[in-house]
Figure 1: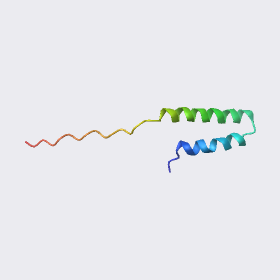
Figure 2 (figure 1 turned 135 degrees about the vertical axis):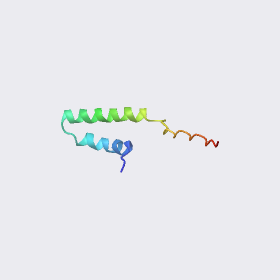
Figure 3 (figure 1 turned 120 degrees about the horizontal axis):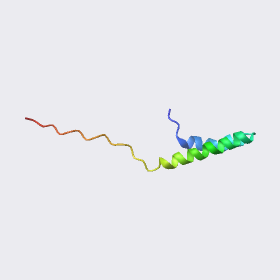
Figure 4 (figure 1 turned 45 degrees about the horizontal axis):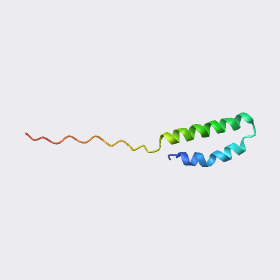
Length: 59
């Protein structure tokens, strides 16, 4: 099962609420920020197409 970033983004507010310590709260914010950064980088990417097969030359 592949977990998409949307699932993690949906759970992030609950993780931030559940953190009672200041360090854990800051860590949750840093992880969310890094997730948004890498999610933004992956927008608009298209999967690589396989290289075309060479034509069959008959002698």
